[in-house]
Length: 305
Image (cartoon, rainbow, N blue to C red):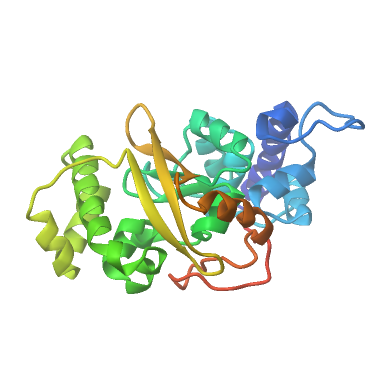
């Protein structure tokens, strides 16, 4: 058993190295640089893209590292632009269960991931149809907080909206009723598009019906409407209210959405969004154990497996 584990770790390292060497820096939004000796990415670049330390990633490629977590595997799969088959293979090499589609470790649609990588100054993120955040660019983290730490049912912002009062701090109180109605109508549309026996959507709806009278009352109204675009006000803990247009791009099967945020015309939001690049993520990080934004001195989190 131990020998088999060592073999798998060696294969995992070799596989990571082979995928790293095939990616051009431009594919992930990095400059080629004048002194690049190899056509692929450097180890430190993969580590940066995956949110890991360079030493930890080096250990993985050498086949000497500890078993990577499911969160780290998902991050590596995205950093290395793996296909669905390659991602599943990576999970099996790490002796981790392959995640079901729709959860926080879902494989991000390649086209959406490519577009996200090109949006360097516009807040953007990819979410599932159940509002689970899969990946954010740095401006989105600065605007909305880091959503990567939530697990289980809490990974869905809709679940947190109806079960955790602190989740609503993102929006002004005057907008809460409208947002609640929009979330419920969107969830009904998303659940209907899925198979009737879909366990993930069904479990989420049953839970919210049990624990949230507000959700139950709105669900009984049978409103249905996908959120395709929206003008909304967001509460930033440092910069205050920011009014933005939120635009949605849907994947072919409707399971994933690319959201990007632009300044609302007639407001001072353009300047505030530019200021976010200066503020960065140092003032806004949402910890996995807490639902409301908290201040921290970190500019970017480092994850280990």
